[in-house]
Image (cartoon, rainbow, N blue to C red; front, side, top):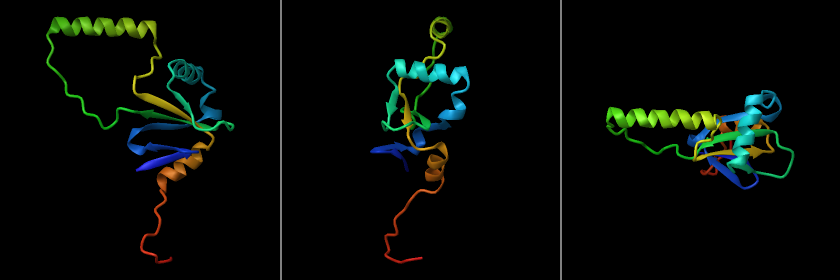
Length: 127
């Protein structure tokens, strides 16, 4: 199923991580830093040029399956060390496939669209 975010933008509901209200969520410094980092990484898509009211965080890799591989303890230790170094350098790194959509629709409107999707009456019956 897809969620219409406004204008010509549709997002697969399986990819949605969260829908957030810009007025209430950007009070926290961490959220502002997250959005700034996403914008710097070019992961932000403005759905409309109108006044933004909400943002939707999506995982572009949803639905893909990753299989764990067997690693030697030495290789795993090196990988963990490198991972810690990267996280110290850039603590708010945005995952590669994640995209943040800025929408002019309120989070309540988007939630309503998610909860009650529109299905046209294909049988021609009314009521």
